[in-house]
Image (cartoon, rainbow, N blue to C red; front, side, top):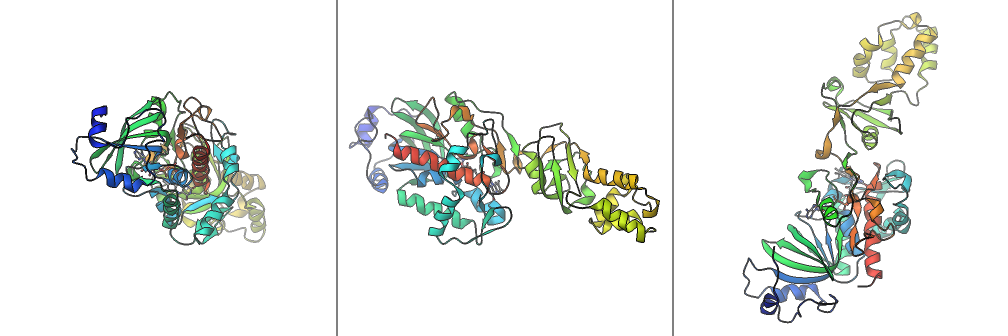
Amino acid sequence: MHHLSHGIYRRYLPQFAPFSGSIRQPYRENPVQTSLFLLPLPLNRATSLLMTYDTIIIGAGAAGMMCAAHTRGRTLLIDHAKAPGEKIRISGGGRCNFTNLATGAENFLSQNPHFAKSALARYTPFDFLDLIARYNIAWHEKARGQLFCDGKATQIVDMLRSEMAATGADLWLQSTVSNLRATPEGFSLTASRNDQPHHLIARNLVVATGGKSIPKMGATGLAYDIARQFDVSVTETRAALVPFTFTDQRFKALSGISLPVRASTNAISFDEDLLFTHRGLSGPAILQLSSYWTEGKAIALNLIPHMPLFDSLRTQRQTQGRRQLSTELSAHFPQRLVDYLSAPLNLTRRLADLSDDKLQSLCENLSNWQMTPTGTEGYRTAEVTLGGIDTNALNSATMACKAHPNLYFIGEAVDVTGWLGGYNFQWAWASGHAAGTAISNGPQ
Ligand SMILES: Cc1cc2nc3c(=O)[nH]c(=O)nc-3n(C[C@H](O)[C@H](O)[C@H](O)COP(=O)(O)OP(=O)(O)OC[C@H]3O[C@@H](n4cnc5c(N)ncnc54)[C@H](O)[C@@H]3O)c2cc1C
């Protein structure tokens, strides 16, 4: 830990008064000047450089960049990744499902279902559409209000970088953070940049380091660690929007088949596509369901949610009585799925041999296929982390901690988890905007 003595201040930063009282006073207008000022000094690598900011944001993802784009004053955004907004870049198959027109608090999971309302109302999908219109980013609606870029998702990252540049925010990449502590004036921390430790102080600290999903992309539990350090409670976290696994690999033979289903737990149902995989089940229907699933719980698949199969089979029985049930079902389902179900559902019977009751029971089996997943693919592939910073600890309009008014948590780190379909980015934009405008409007 690098504690700067006043002697070091005097030696390396002669123009800066030792830190006391308001941290606004020693700020320089232009961040570049500050850096230039520091560079020519006879640096000892082991010695920290002192830099002061109004606001430090840790995490240059969707929420952190949005926050920086709305934060006035001297702002520094720090990330350990090589590039900002990496999840934006890969999202939506490279086209970023950047919002959902139907966004409402009901599309989010949280211990407090009302928490997200305020921020979502202050920054809506239409506000984001106004922003991307200014950058001429073309988009289209794919399904159910899901908006995607026509071109590459990197347009969104570039746009946010431009917005940040307009507010004058500094961006430090490949930089790690340590020694965070509260000071009477705000916060101090060490950021290692190009192996050079920098001692940073700021009045406001915004934590935007996301959840634990996809550690290979740089996800860490830093937000939860910081919360615990400041006695801010964290709700239980787990992987969400994630495929189910079955240790017996029972669906291996069906791998690659996709079909529309209704997937249900006893809490909720989703009508979306199901995808069979080597290791289990995936596809939008399953990803959605996974957010509501806990280990040991059964799920049910309805393979005929909008199909009047019973009526269709009865009609066919009159004219095609000698036809095998499996042949008839092949008109409605992929052949491999029919083969798979053939033995358990006894599909080699002829239509003429089936009473209405038997047809009804077949349809019931197809509409209520129960199974209990062994687990999920976990954080390795999960799109989001469920749970996080306890919303009871935060002000819903500003994202500030009630007990530490200058400490903010935004984005996926917070216990607000959206459905699949652009809701998670809308939360990142809205919560980042909430913190950024609160900092800009508040006392500095
Ligand atoms: C494959 C995939 C596809 C997705 N597609 C969509 C989609 O189309 N639509 C949608 O709405 N949502 C989508 N999501 C979810 C969405 O990406 C996230 O909800 C959103 O990015 C969260 O924003 P955030 O800023 O809170 O966190 P992130 O975007 O994860 O950003 C966190 C940042 O913090 C940095 N960081 C983490 N730990 C540290 C540390 N210790 N020190 C320094 N920096 C750190 C990370 O490098 C990262 O840059 C997708 C997610 C994945 C994984």
